[in-house]
Amino acid sequence: VSGIWGQRFTEKCLRHGAEVVQLVKEAGLTPSYDEIAKVLEEEKPQVLFLCHGESSSGTKQKLDGVGELCAKHDCLLVVDTVCTLVGEPFFADAWGIDLVYSGAQKCIGCPPGLSPMTYSDKAYEKVMNRKTKPDIFSFDVTEVGRQWGFNGDKRPYHHTPPINIMFAMREALQIVSEEGLEASWNRHLNAHYQLWEGLDKLGLKPFVKNPEDRLSTVNCIEIPDGVDAPRLIAHAYDKYNLEISGGLGGTAGKVFRIGLMGYNCTPRNVESVVTAFEAGLKEQKWL
Image (cartoon, rainbow, N blue to C red; front, side, top):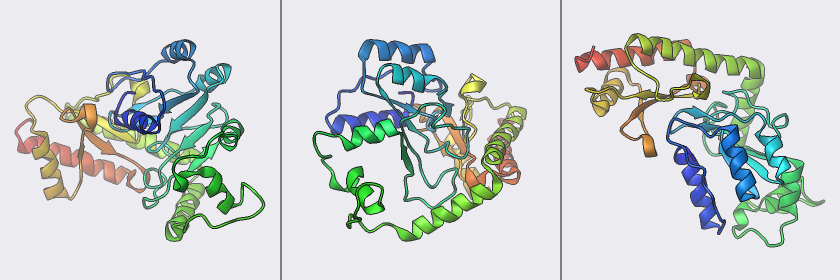
């Protein structure tokens, strides 16, 4: 847990009666391979959860080798890719990840309302061999699977799908396909570099100190001493019709957050963000 989304996952597990052991890191840091290995060895968990992109603190979790580590301990690896799928390199099969969930509205660029998920064979087998039924019928993937036709011979009614959003998702994925996955990764990374080149010239500093741990899709900027953050945010919105976010959870009051995802991730939009920061800092006579 290094931010609000790890905390939220913990809360959800606790509400379902799970026994949770947290590996807590300060906001802006990520757990190392060795720290993860130590926890797996000592606690012997059934599931390890990691957030690939912790958008509340702007960190990117290294995943290479963790899947093999989990397999060694007969532990399922669950990864949150809500703000990274299509925006950051991600290899579910090669990295041995058992369950992945994401969001439609971030880098994929679809309206919100869907959560794409994928299961490894091991995770799917685990779900299908449950000894008890899930306590929420609507979220029972075995029932959902019957309606979608990947579980059982018949397709009984389970719920009315949001068809309009599904057509939107199909179009969004078509756009991703036309651009190409690697091209999309590079576009997000180049926007990240462009943003920090501009912010560095203004004297602004990244909240995540290790460049390897920085998300390209959600960028966290330290609020400098002497800067009124709400005033700068309001100035950007009023003068430039541009929304700059504040921190979440442990980073509230400490950072600005800039999302460069999907359609928003263009050189022109990055220029607008840098211009708004420059104007807001000058308005406060910080520059």
